[in-house]
Amino acid sequence: MSALTDIWNTIHGILTSNDWMLLGTILIACIVIAWFTEGLSALLNSTVMALILIAVATFAEAAIKAGGKDIGTLAQTDWGVLMKMTVGTLIAYAIICAVIVAVVSAIKSAIGR
Image (cartoon, rainbow, N blue to C red):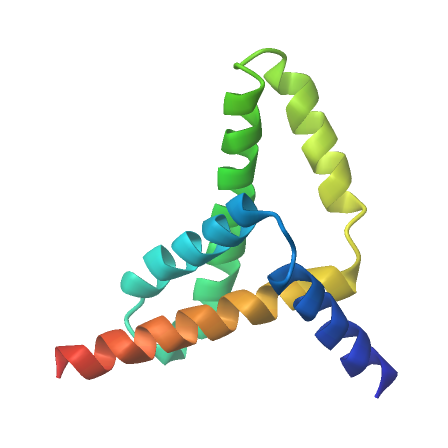
């Protein structure tokens, strides 16, 4: 039960953070992926694609803020941060993405009928 509480606290921490750019990136990436998803049968694939899209968008944002200077070092730093990410944090991001993708996909299916 402690693991579920830890994951819930991580999800709560992500959703209540003051990093509006990250929250907006998560929302937009999940909506885009859900829009191109055929249905809920591809939820796992869509979640992984959303996580990849979030990582690429976050890297692009950092590269733009850096003015395109020394992107190699930025890539190595981001890779190091990704490798040090805990499994609980990764699961929390995956749950957030899966829920958003599922909701948007269900709404899209309901409207399309």
